[in-house]
Amino acid sequence: MTEERIFEAKTVDQAIEEACRVMGCLPEDLEIEILEHGSSGLFGLGAKKAKIKARLKPEKILSERANRAVMFLKELFLSGELKLEPQAELAEDHVVINLTGEDREIFTQNGGLALEALEFLVNKVVARRLGIGPKIVIDVNGFREEKEKEIREMALKAAEKAKKTGKPVSLPPMSARERRLVHMALRGRKDVETRSAGQGERRHVVIHPARRK
Image 1 (cartoon, rainbow, N blue to C red):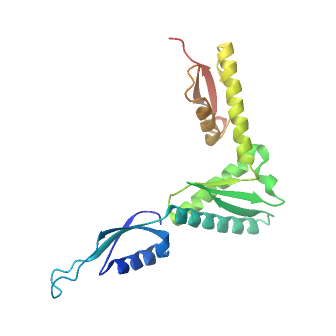
Image 2: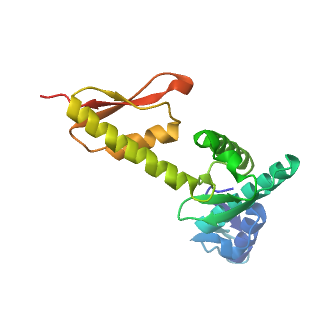
Image 3: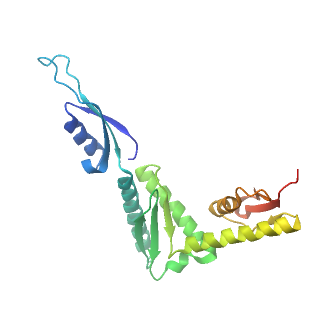
């Protein structure tokens, strides 16, 4: 549960206790804004309840998602008899889970297609349990960083070729994430334009020389 919620009780402390019970956490895991301190009124007349606004702290949200993802992956690998161990690390706004073990190369073959599928599955499972929230990234010993570096370099070389020849250059089929990297790598350049083309598994990016005005 990641949304902001309102809680009321006789006192602020009781409202915080209720927030912790409902949200399944400790007081130190919450960001709390006191909306009303509450009052007992005169002889019990005109009493007002205390009211607070509470939400989980970002680090708590990340920690919960990391724990859930690791638990799911361990169960998945155990049932598949895969020798893999997921290790979670909390980034500023997302979770990174690195896979170590003898079978890690299964997920880096064919350009990391299996890794993409596993990441999609993990995010779906965690979202079903905890709601939509910070993204969970699955990696294998820095594979994603190296892959992203290769894609950016490919995009830059293709851009220079398009600029030099004056003709469009088509890149090979890529996942949505990889196509986004190409667009981002060349965003802001005035000498080339990027456009996605193709359907399904053949979806790719075409780099066009900029039209002369």
